[in-house]
Image 1 (cartoon, one colour):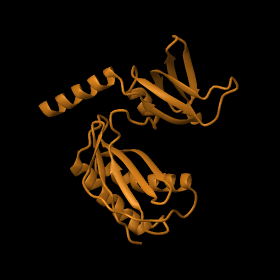
Image 2 (image 1 turned 135 degrees about the vertical axis):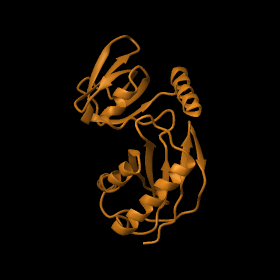
Image 3 (image 1 turned 30 degrees about the vertical axis):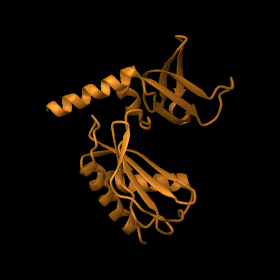
Length: 200
């Protein structure tokens, strides 16, 4: 297998690309299956390097792309050098395991400010911030999309306070997509964290 990499790193909410070209076809097996396999394959090595895996996503199309989203430790943070380090490790593992049929694009990035919420810990970490959630399928009342302040969550449920003041409990395994909303308070919190990191 010949892998031509495309590495990127999000600094704040902006992507900073530092390596380009690529080519490819798709995967051996379904998209969901390949994402799960790759996550299980790379997560131990990422942890040993001090990184948390946020998400693995395969984007299909004329130029298939594998996105690895990671961050350093529980407080986040990811610079261009970190992205390069993760990219080299992932490339080496994929060369050995070869889950793809041919060459493909590899993109390594940090989550950014308006990050996806994937793990139960994400919903606890960002309590008080606004988020948008979409269920895999509509509930009995026909509703599928929700937006409100996070009240916490675990492996069973995610709790949300909507704009009308009502509270909703959504089954964690029914959440298809979830991400933070880019609000003034989220930006302020991110800037404060960056300032503290620079001071340290």
